[in-house]
Image (cartoon, rainbow, N blue to C red; front, side, top):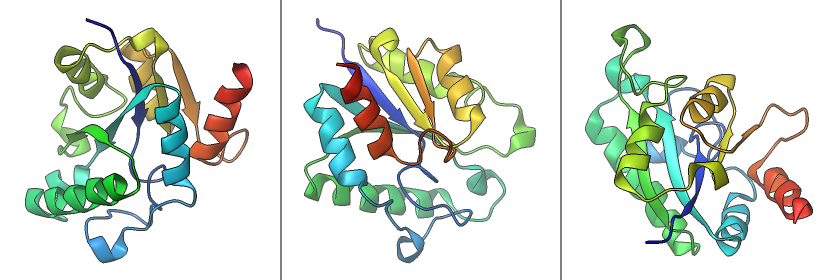
Length: 166
């Protein structure tokens, strides 16, 4: 069976604007160009996965049902734009819970690897925090891109960079 190349994306700050603890559809605003950028990655043969810390669940700022409802909305919006999200992995724990899934630990990536035939070395992580990149690196993800406004500000910037490598 052929291994797949995964594009792992953090959610808040990468897929959508992050004013803090986004859990309501009316507060969810997609980042400019995200649909076009992800279609570009799909054209390059990547499968899309979301890996997101959601400590708002553990902190009781919102519920699992709130997260599920927003995730369904997000994936449906992506589908309508020709982008399939293969799976959303999330950590619902608060930082003090000392779980294995909360980034910068690699649990969500290792779970994806156990469920899908992923070529981690050919895969990419795009995040907006150093912990996103560290978690991906710990699981053997080949490249990590930090959206810190320095070299990269958007998923589209990363796509253009990757295309330039070809």
